[in-house]
Length: 93
Image (cartoon, rainbow, N blue to C red; front, side, top):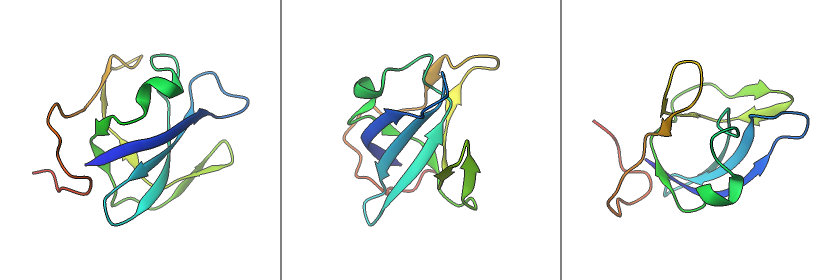
């Protein structure tokens, strides 16, 4: 589980956002294709499901150190989030 600390659009892309997230013991940068559904400023503070055990990947030249989970096939319908104040870095079972 991670908390979004900062978000901004990736230059040259309509749907990619660059997020800075906290996993409790560390911070990471994640690139996600959710920009058509969410404005960057609306994401700050959201508690999201993050897959953190992936190798870093470059997306449009920006390094991504994880992947968030969202519902939707062709387009993003909703982020997988938590309603309660769960501490960042809490493992998901």
